[in-house]
Length: 259
Image 1 (cartoon, rainbow, N blue to C red):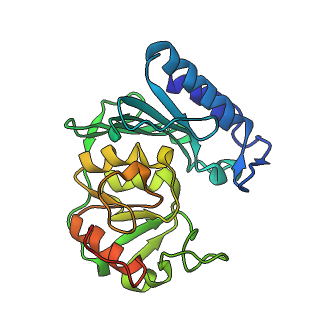
Image 2: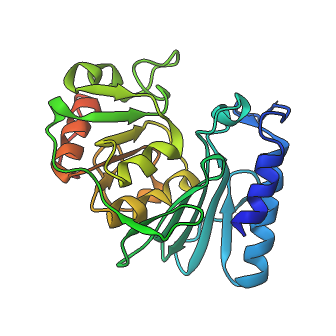
């Protein structure tokens, strides 16, 4: 399934014409073509399952099985000809992510996890290896990935999250972006990663991968339940680090009771 999707994504890599959706976000023929391929495969093998994708929509079901997909997560990197983009695929059962795949076509790397089975890294011609998050690190020594300033106090249209506070509190801010930064967190090369604006298809694959690698996840308000229904995301190597990041970026008046 991913091989067929890759064929479309890599065929148009560094040559795809950019279009814009109604919300201003970028999309290419590769995004749409790859999602159609993924949907056909799921319809053939799992005809009873619901599907929700970035390009062609669907229904986010809170009971039974539902597949979430983002054919090119990191379209901004893709259209610039940079290899830091991925395909996200996840399975949700009764509203909770149970299986996730962070696939990086241009890098030929796949990070995947199923609840209770660990998080694994697969590369061509190599045996899959189990991966885990970094050792406990205090906020002041943490390296944190960030995708964008959307929905934050640093955006042109200001949002609730106080991202401007974070750089002075950590060791380094790494603008890696999108799903790539979470694959790196799972391998222990980055202590944490945050996204101030997310959708269900962005979140679904990340939850089992980070948790099975030994990490902690929530939204930026600190909620750890119903994550695919949230609109932001943070992953960290430890719960302590995740809480510290949440405390830095949350709006001042917000309670910490859900952390």
